[in-house]
Image 1: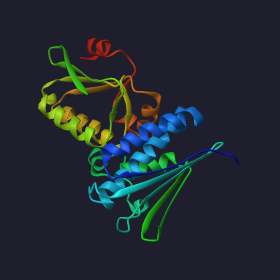
Image 2: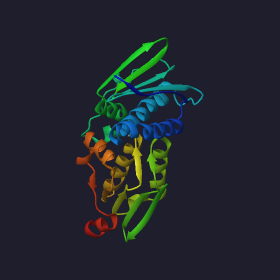
Image 3: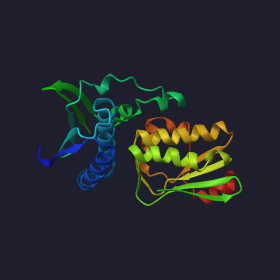
Image 4: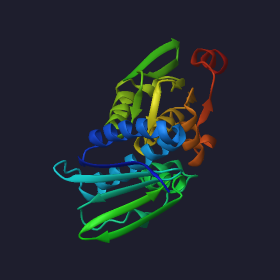
Length: 135
Length: 114
């Protein structure tokens, strides 16, 4: 399958930097894969990195997150890597969608990724958390 | 980024500046802004999302909080003019059954519902 785009970014672990990257990359992806896929990618980048910032790095902005994006004809492969302590976001319990109180407790981000991804996997390798999302 | 217009007594339209993104810290600012504006004093609030370009889970949590605050004070919350992508996200999370999602002009919604 021909590669159409390959991008690697290493950004500070801050919400502002994640939002900036997700906006910039989704504009580029929209021109290749369409608005729908670009929006899903932006959601997955934002939610996965927010989890790292909150639960992995505990809001330490001096830490870094690496985001790798590979786009083939009909597939976007997104990888998020960080050096925080072991944290598998896939272990998180999904919130009860019928409970407003439960929705506010958390877990909605990973649920959004699960709903949008065709596949999602986690591995711990070389002291890194590596989350791979296929769109 | 957030604005409020009292359309008629007790009824307000909340709207966003152009190309707004409700993510991370911005979601937190929105919650504080709602508190500062004493949003619960309105019996009817329409959130006009025409300029809302993107929202993440923290932004959605802020909307749910707004819904709670208004419901608890006996008011009504309507959300309108969401992009197709955001509508689909809310539907995926089944929030379209919780939140009153419309597509009409906000002033018309105020006239018809408030």
